[in-house]
Image 1 (cartoon, rainbow, N blue to C red):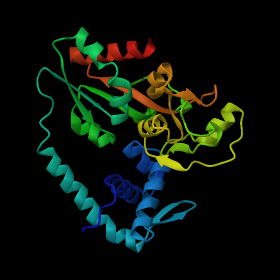
Image 2 (cartoon, rainbow, N blue to C red):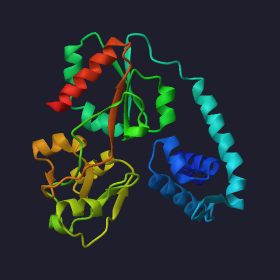
Image 3 (cartoon, rainbow, N blue to C red):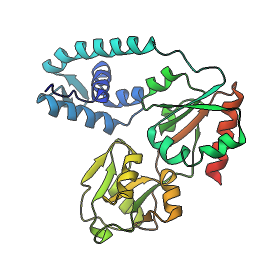
Amino acid sequence: MARSLPPLNWFRSFEAAARHLNFTAAADELGLTQSAISQQIRSLETRFGVRLFERKARGLTITDDGRKLLPQVGAALEMLGAASAKFDTGPTESLLSVATSVSVAQWILAPRINCFLAAHPGVRLRFLSTVWPDEFKASIADVEIRFGAEKQVGYKALRLGPDRLVAVYNPELVGESSRAPLIETVGTSMNWQKWAAAAGTVLDRSPVIYVDNFGLALELAIQGQGIALTSSLLAAEKLASGELKLLEDASLSNPEGYFLAADENVEAAKNFKDWLLEEIRS
């Protein structure tokens, strides 16, 4: 059986870091945090069993193994970009395209989208699952909902909120919730220790489940797999229904969040933006 390849995101992070010789610059380019870039590259190094960079006080230097890998990764990414461009014909006329992550589509849009369609019966929707900045650029979408810090999400993007980090769990969780596994989302600047400080409590254990997006953390909590530190915006419906409960009456401000941008030249896009902002406010 052929060995599975490492995730494409790891290669993107490696290639960007190798060009910049700086994790922070690579993070700015890809719309991620510095810690996410660092973790993905460490994962790639662990997978290959070699060091790709030497970490030094004043920056990075690429190793011999990294130099061998870089041209092949760069060429492969260029080939993938060229191949996908041939199929990108842009949005179909009269079809409103919305580019966003699966987390936003599942937890924010899906429970509400029938209301938008009922109010705008002539609109057809096309959802594009996107995460990376270049994926948003390639999608040519009418509406974009991105995750990141304000400086990463683009001009005139409006933050969806209120949105803070909350600790949530399924009330049917087996055993005491105080001893349940902690679920943490990597690639963001907030973590369980910072939440504990905001809650005025002390954690006596570390997370045992790590995920790369708030939506998956939320799903694991719903399934009773542990306590998730996740977005209050994503968790709002499940908290309102009682399917999830807050571990403490505490929340943590998050510099990263979900930002909405719409093509003001497309009437349906403006309507979608106004509708979603009103839905979240209410």
